[in-house]
Length: 276
Image (cartoon, rainbow, N blue to C red; front, side, top):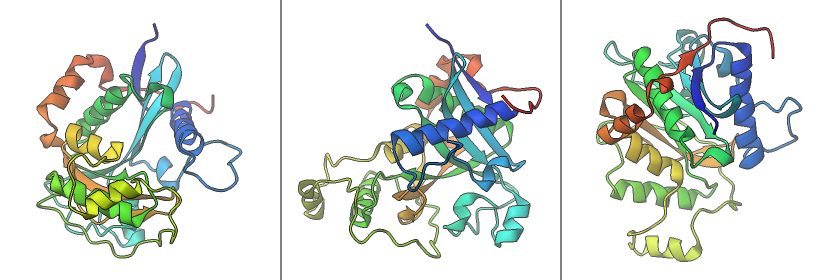
């Protein structure tokens, strides 16, 4: 039996592990990255190497199996982009009003788990380490964009309405979308069947399926959704922006974290290696 552990990436090797997991999930298993496969087989953006970026990686023995990225506020990026936080989501969402002396708002993104481990403790361990590291850094709120698993605007808006009927839209935070990328005129990845869509349009919402990501973060992390669906042209999917207060994590979720023991607090490396 192997042993799972969590690490906050502080070495080149650990950062590389995070980027390779992301490529394996987004580029391989989910096939969300279009175009010619990158020869490096790493999913990487300019935000990944900022001093304000934190990568958490879960290992099964020595094998990296899950990762999440935390983008802390970055004044340099904020100045260059004319934003207030300097996080990636700010490129597509108006985040004015979220910065303040009593709030530290970070963006959680690139949450992914290899297929073999999606129904294992890796998911909870990743959430627990992410929570512990956020606490350590004084984060008060998380921003994120939940994957709606579709490129259909009709289905994305039906999902949003279904979430609203469950009481999962934020009563306090509503963010404006300054501009959105055009979604495909003819979707290639519908989420609902024609029969499910017809039931929703007729007002028969009970039992309507939801994508895993928004339902998971709403139930386990107390997240609430804050804007209209946004189309992500990089991954060719609609997403739904959300916010979650660190202090509002459900007690049941904290109990799950505690049951994992101290090894999920996010161990940290102590030096930087030049390579593998």
